Image (cartoon, rainbow, N blue to C red):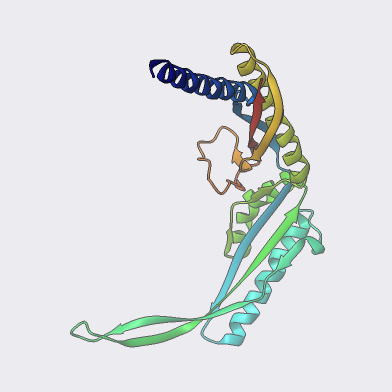
Length: 243
């Protein structure tokens, strides 16, 4: 009886040892792990396209007179910009916007009693787009000269763009991927292993900020248009097998 119990215990021990040994073999055949790295690609560049806009107005108690004044202002602005070296096809005028100007009326006790019509105000905008960035910048700074010609012109700050953005983005992705690969190789080397196959690659958000600015990055991507000199950047997250 004692021998039978011993035989049973010995058989169970063999089964357990077989399971443990089999599990060890399975673990030895599994991947040892992965290496996750994030690389950054960035590039400074100068905008090669500028968009500048301005607005001018005219007012009168008679609508037809207001239209006539606005037309005169438009002709003055157009002549001024042509004298600055801009061609007619570069000047894009918007449709005329018309609004009524009123003043509030209050009674002796301060109660609101309605409005009083004081005239019409008409406004129109002009937009200029050009690859001659420096010329348009200069004009946008000097346009206050129109005041001397009796035109109330409201100039907006220029906006700056880059026409080769698609090519720049491809270059940034390449730089970010190379940066991530070098990081991964260094990590593998420092840990005494080697870099295996690439398992996945995820691209981050493309960001464009003004050079030397304090702009914050955005989850949806930042696209600066107020600075002529900009910095483009993008991240790439790579996952490699570790060997």
